[in-house]
Length: 135
Image (cartoon, rainbow, N blue to C red):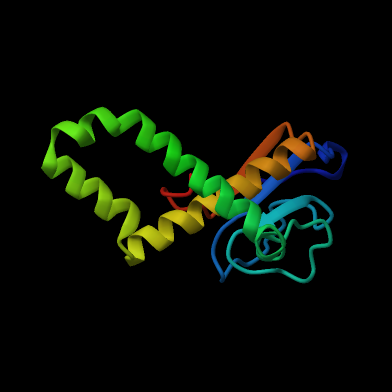
């Protein structure tokens, strides 16, 4: 999608996934952009997920724990009744696994992006080269 300079507004955000993103004038280089996988030095108004993740690690861990607490409150009745259900959910939350780590990292990225959208009062979000999972 090509955006003309007259259409650029401060309330637009472009979210790009993929380390091998090749810029083909999909948007102006001065636009607000988030690269999910790799910093692109030539874009000046980009929100750095990595930098914000590093700065907010403690806060993000607290948010993850709050989410887990809310989930456990909602499923406690089932946990008390069904041993199989209890076993599956305990593994999901407490066992270390690549899928769990990926889920936590996705949670952190989504939280940071949503927080940025709120702070910057973004009205329009455009997704470029985004996987189905992220979309």
